[in-house]
Image (cartoon, rainbow, N blue to C red; front, side, top):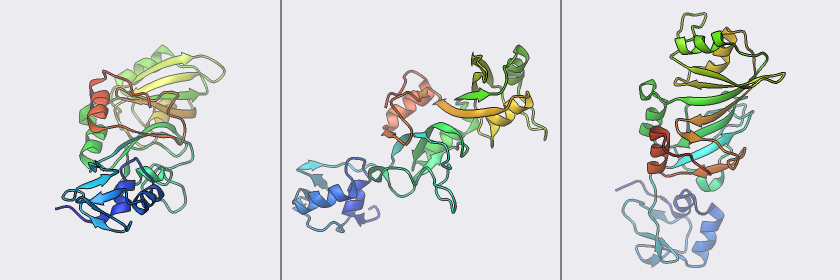
Length: 247
């Protein structure tokens, strides 16, 4: 038997209705529990035991949720923060549920692809260095890269404190006044991409994560927009690199 919770909260956590939508459905007599119409939004239910239906259609409540976000600059990758708005704060109401957290982190001023979930085992798999899952970034820098820079990334950048990064890949995408480069790493150390480029005398002016494994950020997942993806799909895309996600 699972933990009992409010019916309106449970249904609004499933990604189809907002809390106000659920209350309207309940008011119209369209929601039932164990085949009995429910008239109160605060009716307590057990999602693992009770049969919940909307308009006669049984709802299978999901234990875990997997969200994709194109994180905007100025938002911190945290569950809560006393001074800054977090990625959890900007999740739409229909996706909000207890236990959500960002998988890995992006710096406050870094934009791009972020996964948010309440599945700890999945998050560990994504972030563990043993998984060897590469993340791809695009960085605007203040000067062009050389073949020596590219080789240094493949050999493993060493920071001033002696920390050696794992093999990474660097390539130039264009060579304007502020060149655009692509960086692929399979770690997630604090400010890692910025620090790696700085060891080669390159200052990062703008940074965006464009891919995690085979999961890519395309133009249809705009800033502050979200998409939900199911467990099987996100695993196939992330770890098999067979598909791209178009949200």
